[in-house]
Image (cartoon, rainbow, N blue to C red):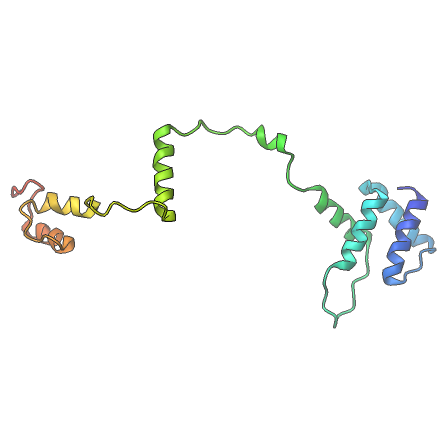
Length: 161
């Protein structure tokens, strides 16, 4: 920004906080900051408006706008999300197999309630208990069946160790 653009920016700032825009030190400070930050007058004015539009506690005095506040707002706007081309260039792993996708979709359907859970199929716990208690002495109560098999110290085939 040149000196005239800095003066235009300071007029916008003065509307909010009544500062003296003709003070040479003030103009020099803002000119130097705008050169170092490579500000454009339009984006700098938007940053000033944004600063004064931010909510603040009415019991406290409003902070005095400094060039660092404008630089911070401009930097935050510049460092937005990366361009789409940059995101697409990131290497990713190989695509999932058809079986893995089918399993994932089935679990999503069950979790969302779109598909009923097969209640007729035996649970994993019931399958383990049936192996530990092949004669079914504790049918219907998998915990007792498992505990009974552990007390008897039998193998899944029913043989004693």
